Image 1 (tube, helix red, strand yellow):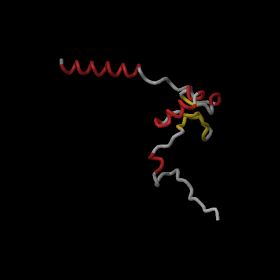
Image 2 (cartoon, rainbow, N blue to C red):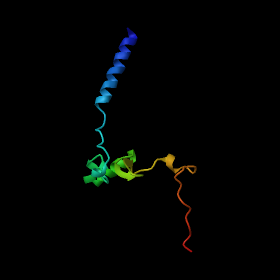
Image 3 (cartoon, helix red, strand yellow):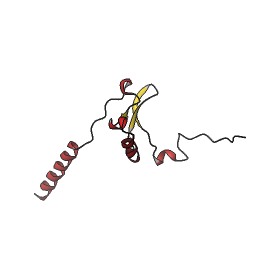
Image 4 (cartoon, rainbow, N blue to C red):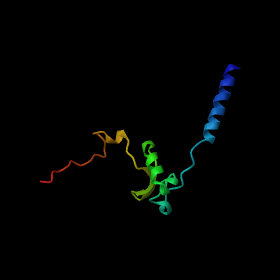
Length: 94
C-alpha cells in the first residue's frame, strides 16, 4: 500500500509537469527564418537580453540547406581547446 501511494504521487507529479511545459516552438522554415523564439523576443530587445543567460532566445537559421533553431549563446563545452570548432589563430597587423 505504501508503494502504491508513492507511485500515485509520482504519476500525478509527472502529469502536472507535462501540463506545465513551455509553449511549443513553431517549425523553423523559410517563412520565419531570422525570427526569434520565444516570439516576444522579436519585439522586445530587453526581454531577449534577459533570456540570454538561459540559452534563449533561439533564432531560426538556414545551415547546410536545413532550417533549424539555434541558440545565440555558446556553452563552455564549445570553448574547449580540443573542440572541432576551433577559432583560427590571430595574425598580427604588422
